[in-house]
Length: 239
Image 1 (cartoon, helix red, strand yellow):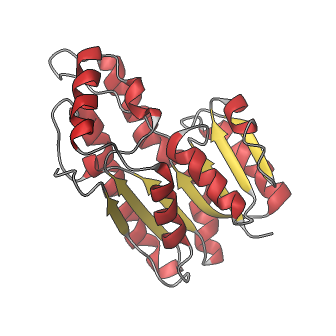
Image 2 (image 1 turned 45 degrees about the vertical axis):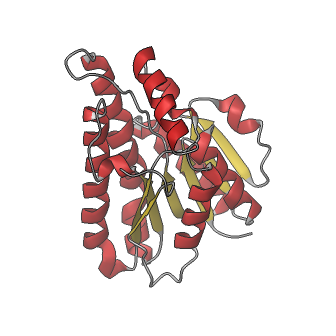
């Protein structure tokens, strides 16, 4: 059995696919999401599933401590939990802005806060943050979502620099459009309809497995090699 991998947002989309990938590669996995039933349905070997809000530091600590007691220290934390609430900034509710800031920014900080110090003390470990191409450029109706993903890029790169001398890797994965339930979070039906029409022009988004393959590639480099960032999108996605 290989080293422990922790995955947030593991009940659907990219997170679910990552969990299956790492389990297939014989890593014990801690799956974290609010939807326990969806994670348990995967029936992954050497797995622990916990219904946890990624913004709840105490519950995250409890889950990671339990997983480490079963499988050993966390070698890789993959922060995949996220929400995308698209909206016209003149009309969008403050609550939707607040929810994106909580999940997309605070959601990468809880797990990082828990595992980073120990990784540094061991001179090993990898943290992978799933950001977005929206963390590199802006798009209509994406204002606060883009802001959260720009923050993910900045936080990831700054922490990477500060722990590099301890042989700890911190990596950003920035996908373009991926075929996941992410758009379903958006409440504006007109925005969703326009988005789906645009997606037809690029012949759908990426398959989540393509993102999992990028993560697998970056993680399985020698520990002294850090692939700092991967940006991946459909060839026909111009922006």
